[in-house]
Amino acid sequence: MVNDLLASIEASPRQEQKADQNPMQFGVLAIQGAFVEHEKALARVGVEPVEVRLPEHLEGLDGLIIPGGESTTIGQVAERWGLLDPIRAFARSGYPLWGTCAGMILMAKEVVDAIPGQPLLQVMDVTVRRNVFGRQVDSFETDLEIPALGDPPFPGVFIRAPLIEAVGKGVDILARLEDGTVVAARQRNLLVTAFHPELTEDDRFHRYFVDISEVSQIDQNS
Ligand code: GLN
Image (tube, rainbow, N blue to C red):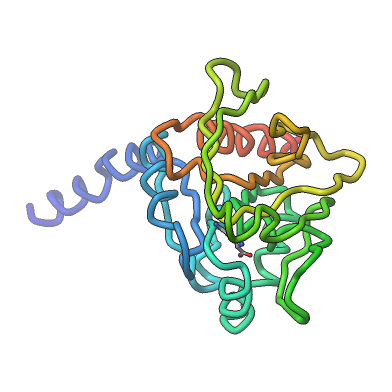
């Protein structure tokens, strides 16, 4: 009797159902900076946020965000915790990787004004300049026309932002300031923004990023 009961519990479809309904899981590198805000935005677009502090936290993730903050600190700690190579491998396998602000600095193949020896991921074919907007104009907000997101314009929040000075072949420019400065770009599964979508209530960039995952999974399967 008890055995029957146990057998029926084991065979219960609940587990399978749960597996089917599991939302995608997206990591946020949780070393320093605005990672909690990214987690909240990911939850709002229906995926499960996972804090990444160790290489094993990358297992099973559908994508990863490197938040804004201080690129030198994030890079140094990521190096100490053995995360740089595993994140490079994650990106090379085609999983979506998105760097906002300091995260964009870490992802760029070339960084002008990097601190000598600053640990970087160097995975995306862009040249980025740090702290361009200077100390006086630390922060500003401006509406950005982003064709990939459609109307209305996207609220760009810039905080001691870097900018993209040059992009390689195969890199699409997603957004520019009115003076032409490039502030968002994509190279296949890699996305960078100089500004902070996670500090706004507009979730279109997070949705766009999650959609990259669906496309790159199709790529991986084909
Ligand atoms: N200027 C900072 C750096 O070099 C980035 C600023 C930010 O992420 N808001 O890391």
